[in-house]
Amino acid sequence: MDDDLNLGIFNPALLNSTMTKQVALSYLPYFDGVKMGFGSYAHHFDSIRTTFSGTVQFVDYGTFTRTEGDGAEIGTFRAGEYVFQIGASRALDSLFSVGANVKFITSSLDTYNATGWAADLGAVYAKKSLGLTVAALVKNIGFVSSSYTDAKEKLPFEVQLGVTYKFKHAPFRLGINLENLQQWDLTYDDPVQQVSIDPTTGDEVVQKVSFGTKTLLHLVPNVEILLGRYFHVRAGFDFRRRRELKVDAKGGISGLCFGAGVRVSKFHISYGFAQYHLAGISNTITLATRFNDFRRPPPGQEKPRKAKRAKKAEEVPIVPEG
Image 1 (cartoon, one colour):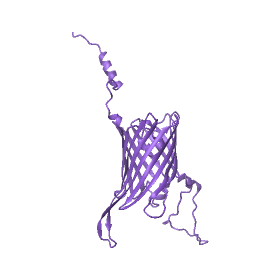
Image 2: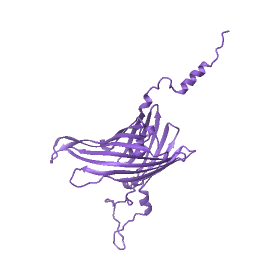
Image 3: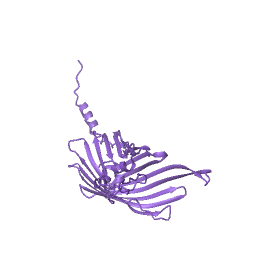
Image 4: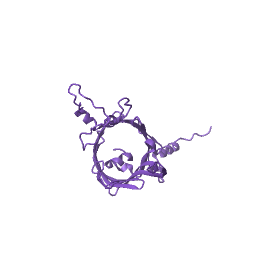
């Protein structure tokens, strides 16, 4: 539970009054010219004690060459996807908050289009005196209204649970996210995995996945180091991403992500790094600011520090010459 609008975009229950008139912009230059990002704005209404947000997310796959069946080039076409989202959150009391997102999703590939409608439901328990936050999220409750083919498709429904704990006398926060709780077994048959044969029986050796491994595939532990009010460092590790995308001969740092954030003047700048595969990395830049910070205070409401200095100057005695 923070004043960071980027968190409220993905779990609407984290939207709160401190985010009012805050805007957040994010950009990710992805693999092979793919571009991703979002823009969001939040506003709190005291009369109904509710915080709203409006967000547009996009994925731009770039320009492709259009060809004939024999390979002759006859032009170009584009492809992309967008999410138009409205979120709302309300605090039930000093500990519990609930929120919801409503999303319209559209995907285009040249002249072909697909659309869908979805909702996210979130709830948060935040006990600041203990440094404890527990957040639950149910994502993508909805349906595909039109698809590229006649086959019926489903949205990527998911249930998540996150817990963070801030130590009272230490500058860091520990957390753990549990993902895809709607499905216990997240393992799959790797089509490129070599088949082992038992030399005695000649039968194929079936490698069973242990209970512990299945549990780890749901876990994403993370840590946040708080270096004062204006700088922080974050890191996380995704066991499932590591297992599915690493190269056996050279695992690299697949599954690891880290980032940093700094407040400069009226802006909050964040950077995120992640390596999904040896084929490339991702670098995400996010900028957040609050419109109210650019407004001049009304006359008589200047910062107390300036008034104090003026008063102190008036109290300095005047020493007569000579």
